[in-house]
Structure formats: C-alpha cells, structure tokens
Amino acid sequence: MDTAADKRRERHLRKWAASMGLTVRKSRARDPHRMDYGRYRIENVETDYVVAGRFPYGYTLDLDAVAEVLEELEISREEEEYARGGLPGHGCSGGFDARSGG
Image (cartoon, rainbow, N blue to C red):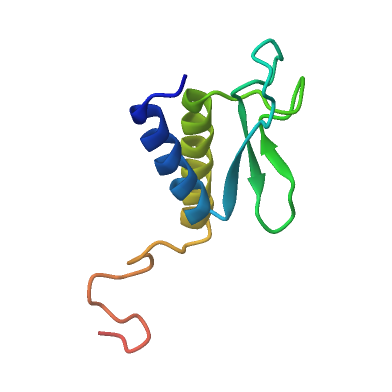
C-alpha cells in the first residue's frame, strides 16, 4: 500500500513535472499481478506524447525513476537555455558598453 510519504512524494513530483509542461500519470491497473500495477509514465501536457515510461509496456516507472527522469529533463533544458544564451546576465560585459566605446 502507498504510505503518506509516498503520496507526498508523488504530489511533489507531479508539481515539478507541471512546472515543465509535463504530467505524471499513474497506471489504472487494479490487479497487483499486472506488470504496470502502481507504475507511472511522464507525458507532455500539450501533445500527450509519452516522454518516459512507455516501454516495454504502458507504464514502467516507479517514483524513483520518475524523479530521475524529471531531473535529467530539467538539466537538459537548463543546458539548452544556457547554450542559447538565455540565462540571466549572459553577455554582460561587467559595466563596459562596447557600443559606446567606454
């Protein structure tokens, strides 16, 4: 059975995913013998595309795996933003304005 700590963790992971435009879905299987019982997957909210947890069956992630995937996705998004120069302060020349010459 799910403990209160698991419920809190699940709620935290759902909020984290939502902040990235994703959703965490839990399998609706009620038979504990099914492979996807109590498992999760991560989907894109806008496209319903399954980002993680789809193979080899519909729901394959446990809460630890959900946390790992969200962390990896957040890191990769931060790296992409940094590569595009989107981080605050990027391009700052320390007060020197190159256009004015001084």
